[in-house]
Length: 333
Length: 242
Image 1 (tube, each protein chain N blue to C red):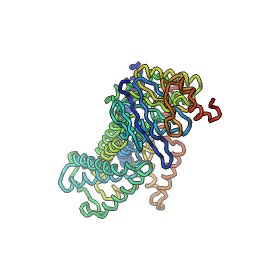
Image 2 (image 1 turned 120 degrees about the vertical axis):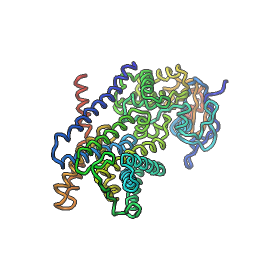
Image 3 (image 1 turned 30 degrees about the horizontal axis):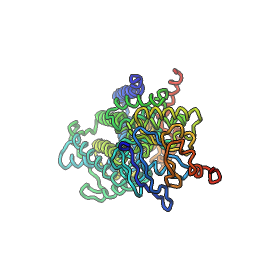
Image 4 (image 1 turned 90 degrees about the vertical axis):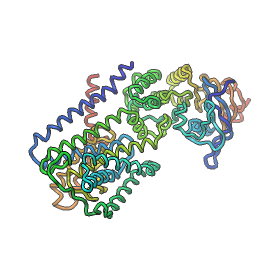
């Protein structure tokens, strides 16, 4: 009996790891076959957003708490690492974890009052807090206010995580980041916490009746999600070499972080990656092709695409694959 | 009588101006199957939720295994060893049957392999072995009720509260459900069942508490209950009283 059980759930999780390794290997050799610099940059950005959106998914997808303020954690990660680097000379290799620590703490603190709110009020509260933080940052002289911070460049270096000419290093940095956050999500999915969080998402009253404390569960999910987002913010800062409130704390960034998971498949392991692989190129290309023509047309095209996807596949892009897997299983059975 | 597993003492609860429960007291012995019956609006659900910790009583106290549990909340009640089902079935719909029951098993299990083993045993006990990897939302209504019981059972409760688990089932399904309740008792679990349809419950229970308009009308063995004039009056009306 127990052996058979092991067969189903454990086998599914093993399959996911094998698929993950295959995709990781594919993404590792992918840039070697692409010489177009613009395209390579696009892939780097998609990988970053795959990681960021997976981080968002830990709270929004698995625990069901929709945050529209994740730019705050992204920004805290970016600013912490950048300030440590530019003012104290501490390597971003360490700084990104300091950033993760602070942004995890911030997500925890935001959760303290906001998880007292139910349902959509959490989303609205995070949205408002995020916008407030962006305004404050734009007026805070200690972090150069709206002017932003430029990270000076002293040559290509892994120790400083600084690369301006070679794009390959950042491909692997972002790939490692996306893979790390995917691995965290995979571990959570199979763990006690993961089961509790999904129970909290599905039915609060039933979760309570099984001895699950709702509030601490949400706080733990938020802290991990925020920390994972902050690390991504630090990596972004090193990649671009310049940060300001507009590029690291804006509301539109919060939406961009959430969208790949929502479009790809909320609460799934592959949704964020799939969503980022589709959305980031479309978004960047529509800016490149239509952005200069007339203000806003790129956003209209982008919005129309998301609406079309949401109408065709409410469960997200992963459901294309799941539907086929079910059909195959039915065929064999 | 030895120390009761559950002692309800002077429980009262009002919602606004409506008194749902008025000064209710009774005891439940370990190993008993107790029926909580009464017509609609008798205060069964309110009392049920008070015992489960989901609602705080206005007055009175509840002792479980000699310790006060009134007011400690649903989470703490579950951890103390009280399991429950819901009148309107609540399953975790993004999960399979196995995963649903694993959530319950994780109350004691730390590692997922242990939770899986425990859940598999409980699922087989509840007759859901064939549906183990089915998504919870695809189950039939009687199987969903079994899933709720399995999930609660995985927390290893010593007291199990079943809310209208036989309501809406076909006679065959109800018989199978009753057999499951007997099997649960054979495992040493004390059971309180709420039903408003008295007929299905009487052959199953050791004792019944009859509620009417928020008050305890009487308690006794099923045979005494059905003959009691107050019960006939509450259910059928004055003119049926012989």
